[in-house]
Amino acid sequence: MTAARRSRSELLLGFAAPVAAVLIALVVASIVLMISGSNPLDAWASMWEFGTRLETSVDAINRAVPLYIAGIAVALGFRMNLFNIGVEGQYILAALVATEVGTKIDLPGPLHVAVIVLVAMSVGAAWAAVPAILKVTRGVNEVIATIMLNAIGVSFVAAELLGRWDSAGQDTRTADIGESGHVPGINWLLEIFTRDVGKGRELYGFLFVAIAVGIGYHVLLTRTVFGYDLRASGANPSAAEASGVPSKRMILAAMIGSGAIAGLIGLPDILGELYHYGGDFSQGLGFLGIAVALLGRNHPGGIVAAALIFGYLDASSPILEVEGDAPREIVTIMKGVIIFAAVVAYAVTERSRRRRQVAAAADAVPTTSTEIGANP
Image (tube, rainbow, N blue to C red):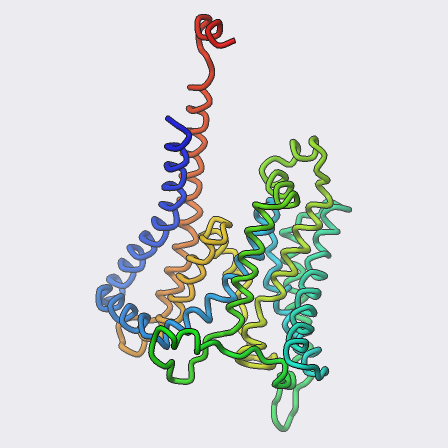
């Protein structure tokens, strides 16, 4: 098999895995719907009709923006074989601190937003640095450390908000960020190609930041020495260290970078819709980011597709209860099945890829003395 054919084959295998995961999720969800007495065709038709409306599409993209950033944050650690399970705590803590800072400063618009973004990234990086330092200095497993730090971070935020409890107004949210700290919506961009967006929907301007994060991630991994060292360390830590790549420094850099990106996850809510931190702030995005990274195979393009799939499911599922076709929890089942099926599908495709590599290597090695003499 030629190198070009092997490359095409691996590309098709990589594409087949997420597609298979989504199809399996549809089949399983359809079976669950039939068992519960619902018609799956009616449910999918309702979701499709509602999900393809312009306003619902805006909701789906808005949901996909923080999911994409979360997926990139997780993927950066994955490429180094590090499991940053602490993305959840990192972004929640970063959002609270950045909001507090944002409410206490008064600067010109772009500078105000820049300060909030830098604070959020700094807090996320600092919180991720704790398990990184524990790992390189004491050998503490990063999964255990980040899970514990999630609990600490979330509990700190809860305690901070409960400390604001006002017995008269029952107000457990921060003050609002001033208008100069708002990121304007970009409905004008959609309306160039479509009708006016109605029902009060506003496409997050933070979409451009998410795009920049994805481009930066791709360039870092594929066009820099650091990215090559990171990928080499993730693929074979012993060989990378033997060739001069400092493993401890790479662990610190990967975890801190992952935490810095994680700090951005909550900012679309804070700067584009809520302008405060409170009980209406979106949580659970860090854990969903793990699923998005897995489904997208840690590739920026794949993570885009995965984030849009999850965003679409979240935005279109409310219609199921409105129409009475099915409970919206069916989407939760679909998400779980997608994650499970993606893990299985990737394991199968990876095993197939390795078999092909072994076969290609075997074909390239001369097997007889005649071949050896003919190929000095």
